[in-house]
Image (cartoon, rainbow, N blue to C red; front, top):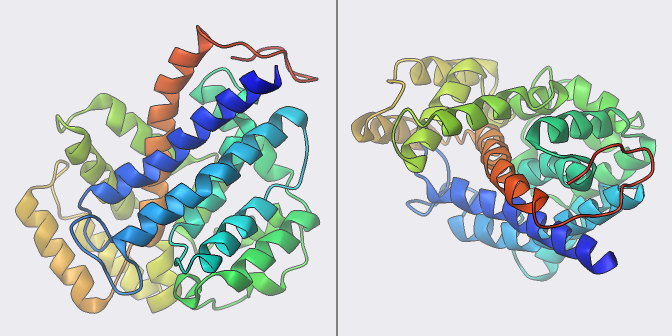
Length: 300
């Protein structure tokens, strides 16, 4: 049974980490990708950070099956490992939002129940999780943190769920995860619908749609609300399936001002994860079975 658990969790962790690789491999205006590095973020650091996170996601998955906490010491561990290796951990937001999903993998039968379980896990995050989250933030590069007008997460003593709720007022990624991964579900649905006829174009379409509807949290923290709203307004002028010319013109606008829609990239990576996890659940359900964890009535 233990071997089966480790197999399932290892596979799921690779799915989660490889979603970052896919996200970073698609050209998206203002983001680091295989086509460009940007100020403060290199494409290679995105890839290496995703590889480093595989073990943390797998450990979160195993802990979820065994009902063990904490969770966010694993985020701290990933950043610490990256620092020891001389790597800038470039997926803080993605990893932060992936960990509750990883924790819930074996407690769910499909993506729909996974989202529900992960949302329950988020709401149960306590003061101990806040301590680990704060430690992780202290290790993180200042370029991620930006400017916080009314609070410093590193000084918070409340339940981590309450910290996330507070920060959702200013950050699109936090709004996403405190609203049951709402915007990542939109990404997942866009990828399933395949209106733009390729994964790359569908990812670009999802990126523009999310950015249009949700002013980016990283831009907000670093440059203020007006800049974030201007970027969203620009995204609103692009086609549903944006042309290459539109994307490159938008990219020039963003990079000339130093704007990186990094929170939007995190939301996209999570949506890709949901899309790929659905395929993984279909495969795994018919080939692998685990004993039910206590309190569960249905599993893989």
